[in-house]
Image 1: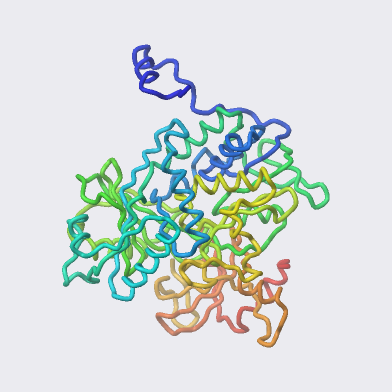
Image 2 (image 1 turned 60 degrees about the vertical axis):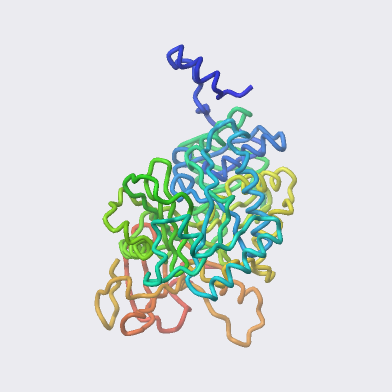
Length: 419
Length: 97
């Protein structure tokens, strides 16, 4: 029976809201589990949820060094889309999109998924041709894509400067109407509650400080709350991948950690009812249900574990916003923050068994991890349960760089800050 | 963030281009050692702490610099000309595999 429903809302309202259960328990760690998932963010929690739901593996612990959802799942700009060029990425992110479309129902938790569309603006004829090519590649794999004219864009986003005198005139755009946004905290809480109700222990304030080994095999972890053993240890630690892998004795990875900033303005009346991206720089913007403009741009551009950014990028992002929306010049910025991005050498993620026996690895989300949350957990759970990848994540290996099988959607090569 | 260029003195970070991990060793051009090439192109140390990295003062004297910078605090510990390319004897001594 659904724990949250119109009926339960009414019943609890009439009885003084005294009977709600906490969304998840606060258990102490047991001595051992079948599976330990390191990282209580979106991907770790969804992995635990799908392990329990799809594979019946419920003797699972999720270890989180801080509080639940304190990392990137609460630091992103909440865009969900599957508008990729390469088939490996398209299939994976479209699987994610389909899970998103049923997620609130599946979790019995309103993640406020709003399919308001994502529009990439083109500013040169070559860029428009490139978007047509990408749109065709998407439609070829059954994903919706639509090339929009300037007139259509003008009707959709009246505040946008589409005049010929704009700094970079808009020539058209590529729209994915099924793209959208979701409330990121609700995604973390919904997965946490779903996993908890199926028996998963979510253990907060429990930082992994080392790995327990039997010969070459990983058999558990030492943590700030004691040693915990497990048959399988799965990593979903995003920007901290380098740090945690070093605890396992692996010093080098095809990953650099970078900081990405995001910004929220004061609340405005509805002005942008889609997600819009700028084609002549790196800028994206949407409007939250509370009215704040949510926007961001490029990485700061150098290795960082700081979770805070620097001023040159603030300046650049604001100037890009004004190039598109001169009318927003006097809107005040309310908040800004930074999150750690685990940037791979080809811009695509890694979901794989290994690299050590007993270990499973989920990382390399660059700055696209939020939209992947459902499929990442779904594929990682499959990989952990079956000891082999699902066809959706089979291309996302760790050794693809060595084997020449890189998945470089943007074609930038091994310069992570450019992906 | 200010980076002190040995020629130009302290300059704003926007004058510089980041070229990444300075611990990597480029194999000889004729080398057919796949592991060495793979390590050079794709593997990174990515430490949380002091990081040996290469920057270019592209908006100034265009010199390539070897910078030691803390990736948690962003504090710059030293800057010098990046003579000798990516190869760094100091960092190899720190136990790089």
